[in-house]
Length: 278
Image 1 (cartoon, rainbow, N blue to C red):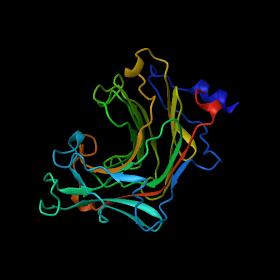
Image 2: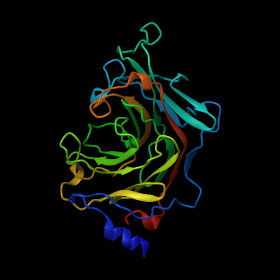
Image 3: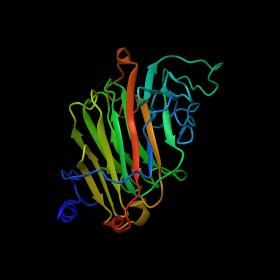
Image 4: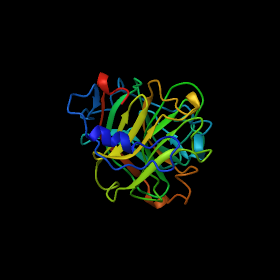
């Protein structure tokens, strides 16, 4: 009955409202992949640091430098991954790829890309004006947005405690104002941990918070890959940006920094065979 109800409420790519309020239970089986962040340091077999655009600058006019393996910006602390954005000026002598940014932070990318399945990330987000934390998926190679993007959760500090879930493709993306997404007010997003979830199936993507679906889109529109490129494994990304076209829309409050994004765990379940195309 629940599956039938969810299918009936699924928002199509051609809809105007992608919001959804329905049960989104966490699988009860053992995850195929998990990082509980219980070690002393970040597990480099599970994560890599993305520093690829430090010298030239990051997309969306973001203003951070992403450090590599620098505890001031990324570390394990009391069983959680801490990604910390700081207001500071670095030096070319110590950081040869520094591009003149006034803020430092970190961006972690999963070593192994994953596809269809259920994802759950328990995190506490920062809300300082100018901060822009995100948990999202992006494929390696190809051009954005043609290869697709899935944003499990984003938050911009100038609009605190409102979380956003979005998908982008060649036909549906924010540069055209056609992205498919929804938002939800979570009054304690910046003071407590919450579970941010993705159920990614071959023809349906559902994103939720704390066991309740927030949005859903179904692949029911013509256009092929331009409409629905979500057919191959993606990298999972955890990062905290500063400023940018969206995150810096209301400016940056330097007095609010440092800002921290805390991640208690990351878990992934492979899809059951009979669920892959529901």
